[in-house]
Image (cartoon, rainbow over the protein chains, first blue to last red):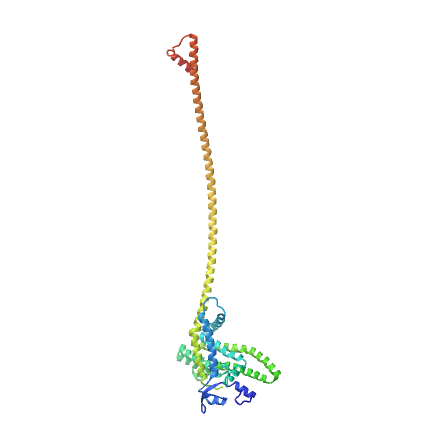
Length: 280
Length: 156
């Protein structure tokens, strides 16, 4: 599978952690990167095609399913899939009502999108690590990383969008002066404003960073363990059987992480947006 | 694990998804949920209202029944009283009727007595005349002696 043809453990792992990158290479021009080095050389103006494809595919899947229910939603007795969608919607709605105190119609749809989308992206982690890359390699695609949330680009993309909304609502609700005052005039007295500014600035900036790194770190670690377990399949019958059991056990445990991280991402987003709406 | 354009691509995708969700997914579903909530609340309220109406109707039925029972009692009492009156009246009527009949019978008897006496008188006059004729062996001028005879007859 690796470009060199020989399959080493390191090569296997590295291959699994490489995104399918498309961009402008200084020497090869507009092309797919064949190695990690080439991908790095493309710099910022490159795109992870696999991350984009899977995330957009899953997001579209989510919206398609929910839109189908939304179109036929009635106040009659719900049936089948409508039940499930209503449970999810009510769950999100309750969380928003409990956590978000101001009035903003955008927050609930954001929370719903984040929760279901991140959950679907995380769930891709439960697909055995070699299945989709194997099919992709048969189709001539060299690299295929199927879990978008193990790509920091994806998680930062989400968290920075949330961050932008936080800044926007902070200024909209409190005004630019009020927002600055919140950063500069507390927790210490006003004359210590440089220290205040530094403390509050760090705490503000750490929000999107922690939000995205938490999700990325959890999923990346989970993915890594799946890859390590998958290595055992090449180590003889005993190790392969052990690997099968381990993979099952880890998948069961990972189910919890998949759901929990999606929930945490959603609830923290609501909390941050709530803080942006609040006067201190 | 490079940070690159994917970051912006993801943000754009996220924005589009949220917009779609805000426009086409969230409102209809939440509206259906709210509608159902209202309908259930209305249904429960209607059920309560129905129960209350039932209780009221039962009370009214009870009241009506009581009224009817009292009316029936009154009617029966009246009927009894009226019946007694009718019997009394009939008795009075019968009494007066019997008296009337008795009186008329008495009058008839009197009349018959009178008639019989009259006939008897005539008979006696005739017998007396016959007897006197036979005694005198001659015809008595009834006209000439009628006064006497009359006097005689009225003496009977």
